[in-house]
Length: 305
Image (cartoon, rainbow, N blue to C red; front, side):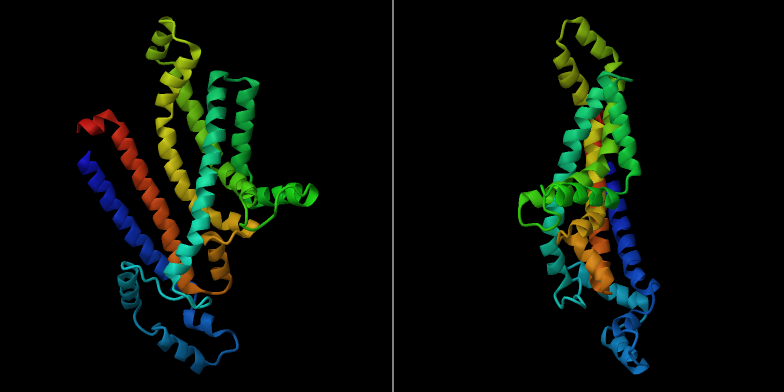
């Protein structure tokens, strides 16, 4: 198992360096960063002065090495627009994004797992069809459209929930539903499939033959084994959620890291955009690595090796 973890860790580090190079290269692929900072009315002399000031006149590999060396010690540069260190700016905004991500994955698990279990217990029933409908709708429905519908219904029509802000817990209800609904279909389908497979196994029939109660069979024996891949999937979905919070935070004006990404893109704040791409990618890499380690730890063959 130790060899497996070391291989996964090495792969994660390699992917992280690859992502860092791609995120740095995006600044140049989008055009001349000096011209973007100078504006449309700037003269050639102004553009050249900005290019020299920020070091854009040097070879890209040298610029990347300088940026990477600073990033490894926590220095992600200074924001062009906010005039603040990018690392402190992201750290401040990341609190809202992390809270939203935890609320979203909790909502997804608390709704998808019971629905998946109920659908597996009564296959082809009305509950199973409702679960299938919610799963298909969750995959087909864009999160920005779902968020706007919730705002129209609960904020404009009924005035029950605030449409934006982070002042109280009520401000997080609609963003949590939108973000959590994004992860529900995969978790629900995996729970249902796992329960169906476990319920048809021999040891479940043996437990029932010995007179075990249905509650014990379902939740002590079946769900405990079927939930193992769901936990690892939830870890991966958490990484997706933190990256996907850009759309949700923009819709509900939550001043988190996702909203910061939208502001930075709109204002050509290249260092902040570049750092946010790296941070969101690292979240996904870390959660994927933790998911692989969890699967290896739960697998008896891996622990024996």
